[in-house]
Image (cartoon, rainbow, N blue to C red):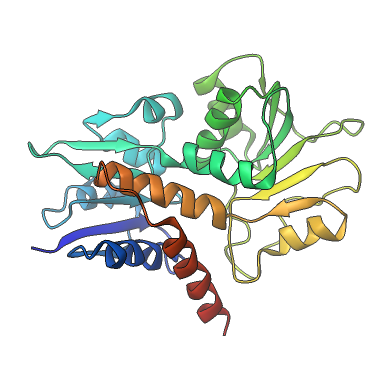
Length: 272
């Protein structure tokens, strides 16, 4: 019987996650499939409990809703309040994890960023931002400043996480230098989106965009035009997908290079 996994989100048309996971299943010669389902918030738990599904992933804007649907959340889900990966247990319960945390660690390592003692400007306060805050603070960041369009949502994130290292700001300190600026908003998914934040030359050492696109995102190009080393969200996508596979299939080594190659090919195909 074919094992079925899905990505739940709104929108999901942009996602290349099906290509990554199908490449992994093919490399493993496993009878499994992965699809993308567009669902509204009220349908998330019902979709997660669909009898035909063995598990799946969750993307914007449903990660908080998915966490609430779990019977057995991981420590990372409890710490962040967000879930991006779930699977059905033999007794029918739903277990889940937040593989965004480890995926971001993988991406930041490839960017050459060490969070210990770092000052970070974080754009956004949704489910992706929660995973980012957890990864940064666990890694030893000395300061994470959250800048979000809706201040109340940023304050809710701070209240949920707590700690003196996490602050909400209306604008970055004009005299401050940051070791990293990280975009955890959805800006960049559409070609018509404005930049999530206009960068200044000399104030930001590194920039990481959790959004990905063919040829990298406009914000990454903006950063590089100012001499700021930057990467988009492809590394995180591959990293969190590999960790999701480890949740679903313990003991198997994810074929990371095959997954990355499939991701690049899918982006190139879309661009053409």
